[in-house]
Image 1 (cartoon, one colour):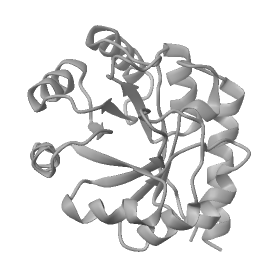
Image 2 (spheres, one colour; image 1 turned 90 degrees about the vertical axis):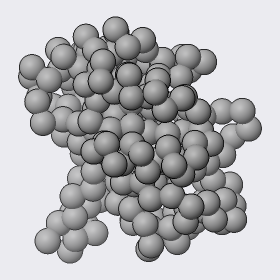
Image 3 (cartoon, helix red, strand yellow; image 1 turned 60 degrees about the vertical axis):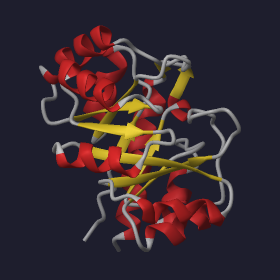
Image 4 (cartoon, one colour; image 1 turned 135 degrees about the vertical axis):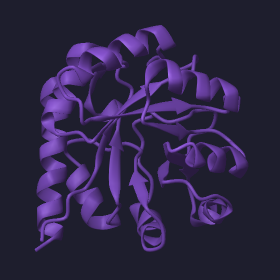
Length: 218
């Protein structure tokens, strides 16, 4: 049976881009709520985006990306925007993860990885999935840089892993074959510029993941 690898397209800011990602077959659409990011949106902007896309593709799941935000702020944004899940991309405590999972959200806990020792924190919490991104000092994702996929392979043998960090339409099939992640996440790899997606690259990324999944399932 073919393996269907979940795909998350992150850093969306425009209706047209989100619609292309959803219609191409992305399973999760990500919105950044971290002000320093060039892809950040306000709750009001995100609410409008989610509402408009849900009218066309109601089954697509929306994930809000937060970095060390207070729990009450996360809950408020979730309720205001109507998010299905959250991605915690900072140093959030395991209790924060647990409370959001108990609230019925799909919770992704991100870890920035440079060496295998960076995986040690995975045992401290129990999110819905872990996201492994490339460690870059003072950055929280969207760097366009990859890391050693064999590290992700080790983690994927034990945990539900979303692979991120420098993925593109050109390399994502190789990444899926090398790391066997549960899912993949992309932001800068399908952009024309920060916050503005390249439609052809979005479609090519999804197609490459689906083809790699089919080969994995042979």
